[in-house]
Length: 609
Image (cartoon, rainbow, N blue to C red; front, side, top):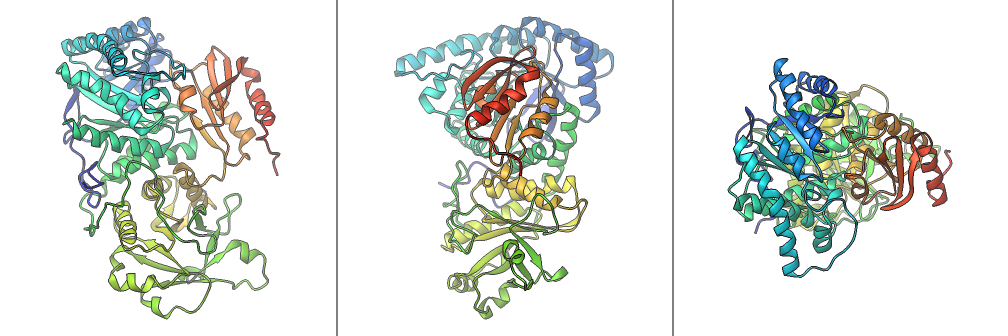
């Protein structure tokens, strides 16, 4: 069986065709365009405030808006919010976001176009992080309880032509799923499928699916697995994509682009939401840019297919390579960039002026008087005439990889391949090149390269994240080299390269912040708090810190975080070390200082240099 059957063709861009779903007057799936959406941060009981924010999202280009719906009171007020919006000329579909409360879902489904439920807590309630032993009979009994709660909602949705999103979050898998499958992609997929099978039995098909995680690697591999598992059970429901708790600013955008971009590149995704710890309208242009950039891949130059049995689309498997100096094997991916930068200093930079005739290791260059200590950068035509040296870089494209090249490169143990591309579908072409190298058992390290013929700016960052990120998520690449005509600000390209590697979780050069976008459940000033936490901890390289607005996903989404700062009441914060509660209900004013104390107590604090 082909390892690439999760999408139509990994060598040719094509949208994966899903079933059509109607959300009010909006059509999703099938051949319909990818839909952009966002979520309010207001209290859903506050009609005027919520209406104004929804209008702002629609005015920014959003096509669907979701609202937190904690309880029956909020669910009932959706009718007033929708009425007010319609009177003001806004007719885009509205979505209720439900956790823990099936009764609230039943009410919401009578008033608005779509209800999102979380299979991790729709029936099972809050996570206890307890492991249970299940027999086949006891597991079946729990599924019957799920059916008992879900079927009434399905009946109401049928009567009111309301759609459902089954939205699985990595951080809120039920204890039942965790006990049987653990914190795994298969567990996340099965959490979705349990509810889908009930819907199918009840002949309810107006469904959208999502599987989200703050870890872009987990999110990508799990969504791919969901697509495959649906195909095996003769299902093809539309997919909502997002990297949850992506954060804010540059890091939040790059992390989202790496995760969402990887799936869009394979034709997967019918609607997307970029979850930023910012005002919700800021998410819309980022999502739009990701879609527009992906659609440029249509009708790209043909890519020579290759045996893909060595490809692992559902888990991270690093390509095997040998080490040449500090490149390849178990070394973290290197960055080749511009030496004229401050904080984000590359490992190597390019010499030889505009001709880029050599690459210099910055560490070597700093320590010697002769600034001409360089490693040659050459073309495939020069491969057999390479002089004897400890390290050389060979730049070529996939189309130049043939039998003659394979024969020559196997005898060159000092050569690092710089994998170039001129294909608009660079992800597919460079992935094919890696698969070809693996099929040929060529183990030279590979630096992934692409040049942007434009001024490198914030929009270029998204493009680079879409182009490079998917390869590193799948274990391809021993280095990154983003080339450009010029950059809009000094050091932006280097900063982008390091951020892409961190978003793909292959190299950490700064703290990793997991922060949610906020919603009506948020219990403190999320944006200002996140900024304050970053300001005081930005020097703690590699430390993972989660800043979460409430307990819905908080403890679970911190599965691989070192420290968590989670809203537990109005103006109250609970601190976690990994998944364990350390201090409860701290006043918000003291909570950041208490977080710093906790980091110091556990020996993870370092003074700023």
